[in-house]
Amino acid sequence: MKLFVKNTRAVSFVPKSVWFCLLISLVLQCAWHASSSSIQVKRDDLPAPPGALLIRLVSLDDSVTAAKWVMLWLQAFDNQPGLSIPLRELDYDRVSQWLDLILQLDSKIQYPLLSAIRFYAEVADENRQRKMIDYVREKFLEKPNERWPFMAHAVYIAKHRIKDQQLALQCARLIREYATGDNVPYWAKQMEIFVLENMGELESAKILIGGLLESGELTDERQRAFLSQRLKEIEEYQDK
Image (cartoon, rainbow, N blue to C red; front, side, top):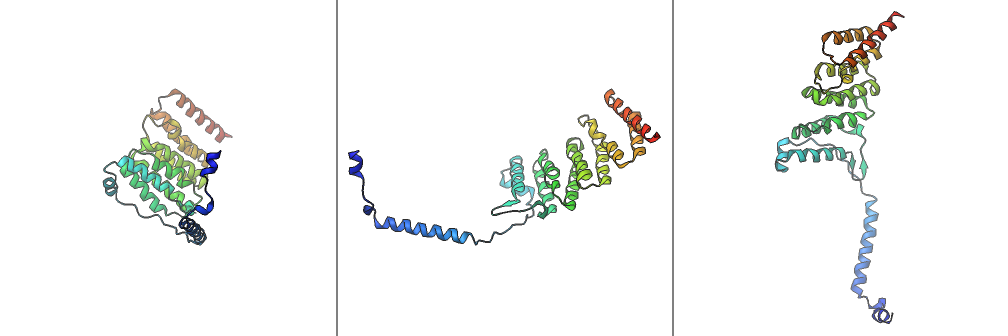
């Protein structure tokens, strides 16, 4: 205890230069806080994307990692320092261009399409929703057996968000016509039937079901039984 008291110095021993530095620091900090409140936050618009070649050069040809970083940057763009930009105010043509760039860097990555239809297409703006559906439809046709889940969600957006049954039918029909791989589940291939039923196009649904049953494409007995039952229910409904 004595040692502590002995080595303790009074405040008066602190050099005046140190007090001066502390005072200046305090004044500068107060001035910065006062001025920061009046700073005008500048909003940046989404720029046009650079070429994929440039990104590959900058990333030392590690395009897969570059694709991930670009995707993270794009999804964070609506949260800029000091402000948050509503998705409906983004330029969706530019958004599509950036998503294209990411796919050029890594054609196997699925997140751009997932982001397009599950993130950007959820905005309450019909024009922007249609842009994302068009984008997903274009990319789906390039690799239908891999990208069918995004097209299936496009059917949902068209049907329940935009409430455009014809657009939902077009999307569902594309799945049936192009996503023919064994990895594509039957429920996805049969979405067109359900959309037709929902639209009241029962005769068209009957023709489609009959065609599927007669084509020999369905080898799964459970699927054949399910469609046969659906056909029977539609015919019974029509006979009422």
